[in-house]
Image 1 (spheres, rainbow, N blue to C red):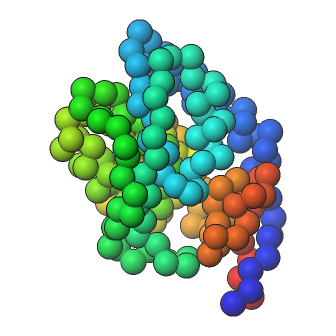
Image 2 (cartoon, rainbow, N blue to C red):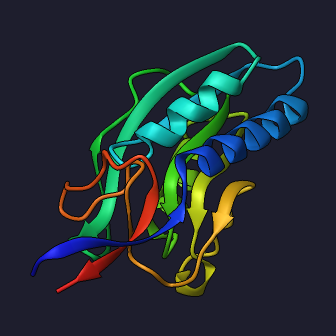
Image 3 (spheres, rainbow, N blue to C red):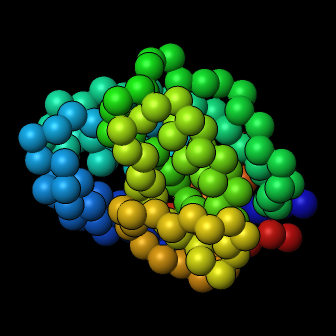
Length: 174
C-alpha cells in the first residue's frame, strides 16, 4: 500500500498557536506547582516541544514508548517498550500525546502512573478523535478535535514515515 499526503488539516502556525493556548491553561491550572511531562514517543515529540517551550513552571520531562498500533489499526493490546526513567511519586504528571484515538493506550498509562503514586495525572493531546474511542479517556488539554481520518505529519506517522511534515495532513492510501 502506498501513502501520499492529502489535504492539510492544520498548519504549523495553527498548531503552534494552539500549543501556546493550551500551555497557558496548564500554567494557570498548576500555578505555584511543578510538572512532570511525559511524552509518548515517537509521535508526541513535536507537539511536546511546542507545549514545553510555553510552560513557565518548574518542569521535568521524560518519555515513554507504549503502543497498541500496527500500521493504521489499533490492535487493542498495549505494550510498554520503554518506561520513564524518573520517579513520578508525588508529582503532577501530564502525558503529552499526539492523538487520542481509541484511548486504549492512554487508559493503561493513566492507571499505570496513578499506581506509581503520581499526585495527579492528566492528558495533553494535539488531536482527539472521539468517534473512535473505546476506553473512557478524554484529554483535559486538547488542541483539536478531528473526524475519523488517518492523519500524518507534525510527529504523526504512517509506518514511521511523514513525521517530519510541518503540518497535520490527511493520509491518502492507494
